[in-house]
Amino acid sequence: METYTYLDLKSLEEKNNFYKKLLFQSPDLIFQFTLTKEGAIFFPFLSKSVITHFDLTPEEKNKPAFEILKSKIIPEDFTLFMLTIYQAKKEMKSWEHEFRAILPIRGLRWYKGVATIESEENGDVNFFGKITDITVYKEQELRLKLSEERYLFALEASSEGIWDLDVSTKKVFYSSQSMKMLGFDAEDTIDHIDKWDDRVHPDDKEKYLKDIQLHIDNKTPYYENAQRVLTKSNEYKWILSRGKIIERDEKNKPLRIIGTHTDISIQKEKEVNLIKTLQIVEEQNSRLLNFAHIVSHNLRSHSGNIEMLLNIIEEEQGEEFMSESYTYLRSSSKALSQTIDHLKELVEIQTELIHKKENLNLNEFLAKTLDILADEISKNKVIINNSISENETLTYNPAYLESILLNFTTNAIRYSHPDRTPIISYSISTDNTQKVLNISDNGLGINLEKYGKKLFGMYKTFHKHRDSRGIGLFITKNQIEAMGGSVQVSSEVGVGTTFKIYFNE
Image (cartoon, rainbow, N blue to C red; front, side, top):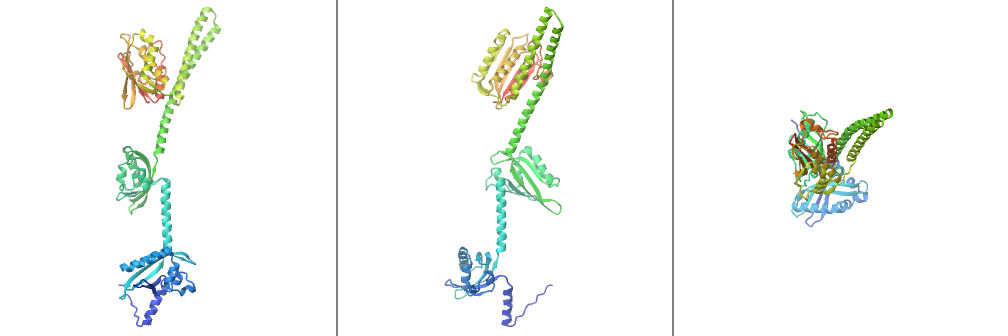
């Protein structure tokens, strides 16, 4: 057991010497001052350390202690210094106060004074205490404050949010910037990780939880995941979340994870738009490449026929043969011209980045189409059923709309059933927000199981007809898709066909 030896100071002189040694060893300024009932202050005792504490000159040493303090303490601090003393006397509580002094040698210094209070019978109050130089601590405190302020400023300037997760309790701190990303105010709280998890989009949640678990299991050096998070206004925002475990227990289990949040909604929107653009370009390039192969083959075929005929003409004589050869030559030339026209038309569709749009009356364009085909309609005794409203309009390219109506109507007439009167019906319906033009006939029909994948291919025909070229549906489909729409077909052999044109206005 520890034992203590108590100093036995027998004489008053011994006691005084002992206390003097203690005072000299103390770096603090030891004092006693009295606050009289009239409010006057005087110092019965003040240790000699006052000289070093306040850089006193030989002349200042002889001045009253109260005058020394008043001359050294910053004026605004001295006023508060005195107020705290009077308040301590009034309440008879211990005194504690921090203040600043300007010194000739050491400059600005911070001090802390503490004292106990005792009252006397005459109403005077005695303060027994010390004054300590706390400049070093104040400077450290200031540096820490400045560092924190710079850190917070940097966070705000970077637009990044901060999160800090206690893994064991699942309690989490989100900075104001993180909360602001989701549209929350200062009074709103998300203090549990489950509250954030519940806001993650269902399609993103599985990967989000998997990525953070991989880091917890120490399989990745850090956690990173982009997720859609539901905002206060019930809209989703893309948030890039990054984090790292900074503390583990003795069993290597994570205790704390800190990380950042970054709003990447704009980047994601640009990414989606870029992907869509690339898909469109890829589809267009694919169609153009396919078309180029076909046209290249046909051009070679036409040019070969013309070259062969020219060689024969050079070798053969006779008026009859020449006349027949010229007929074949003219036919090959005409076919070549058609192929070139088809190529030109398709290239124009694919390369026109901005397609002219106008507000068009659908019935007016249909009437124009039927006028163009009036002879064919009359000759084939075609019955036209039009249930489209007179005021039905489309925002569309006029040349494309005319071509679409003309091609589908021509095909309906061309491939009518020989055993019955042809009937062509036109109607408008809606599918969600899209307008749908329905063009139906009671013609030969198409075997979709056999020809469905080839239906809109170039130079593909499915019925024998002298005017069939297999280019109309191919070009029409390209025109529809160039305007952002689509086309669907339903058909039954011997019954008829319906084309549905979806418009994206």
